[in-house]
Image (cartoon, rainbow, N blue to C red; front, side):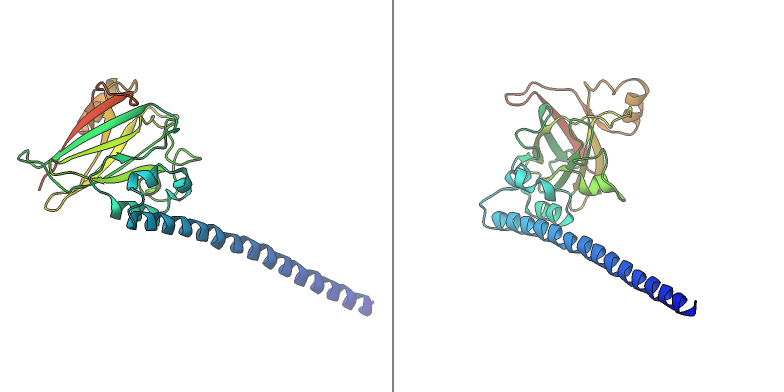
Length: 243
């Protein structure tokens, strides 16, 4: 019996060792996959950076190139777009992005009504389903939507304080009564940071108490204007900064 007990203990020890080895191999396989994906993203971001540096691409052409859609949520990619933005028209959706094509015109002025040139504008939004992420309504993590939304872009105001965004009309969040909107952040030297939302007067959700609350929150609401093809609508917003 003692011999049998020793053999059992030895067998148990061998099985335990084998389990540990198998678990290590599985974990190694999982970990080895992550750097490969990260490396692919890093390569795409470097490729985009080289194109922008060599002026063979613009911020808009990078943002609307399907090749780079996978890296839109990446912080390094977003910083690249931010650091290379200009006063050029900003396009953030591919040609076949579902939804109504719209043009957003913005004017940034100071408290005295004078145009603010060179202001940095950050815009992000949901898609036609009301989703920020490619496969989910929201991006996980703290302030995930603000930092990682798929549809986003940076642009600067021109000498007249103006900027233009070409995109699709967003939809409100699923299973929510909140109206559709485009988030807008503005930074300009000598002025307070501006954080607000562009709302659409023809949004069927923007009525009753929701409209009243939106007005109280000082969200920017504008009526649709006629727009030339390929755009379905145009919206013009006035942004006033304070010291």
